[in-house]
Image (cartoon, rainbow, N blue to C red; front, side, top):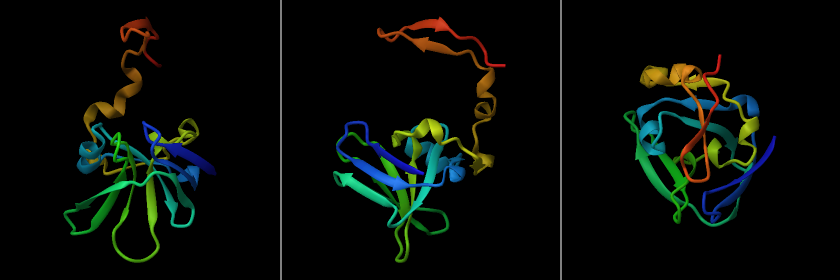
Length: 147
């Protein structure tokens, strides 16, 4: 599937080919901290199938407990995370951040990883009350619980 995306401010734009069957949620504590959320949604793409169309990412290298080095590319202007990849030599796999992809509605996660670190409430999101927010930032309409 051909996709394209951008950071929040538009400084970084990109294109890639991805397999929509490979979308996953990661619950590891590093993804929770680095995303500022309860989990991260990613889809892999390989070197040569990923092209930065504008801007240049800033990199942060995270060293895992195994000693593996992961390069995290993000927008130097707005801070939006764009991808992570290995730092070693050889063919790269870029794990793109689904939230930055224009076609994100079509990229449904098929698997979840590092589930032992999942926050307990993430497994029951459908039962929580849902609201739409108005232009003033206030709750407007209760859409109720999803069955």
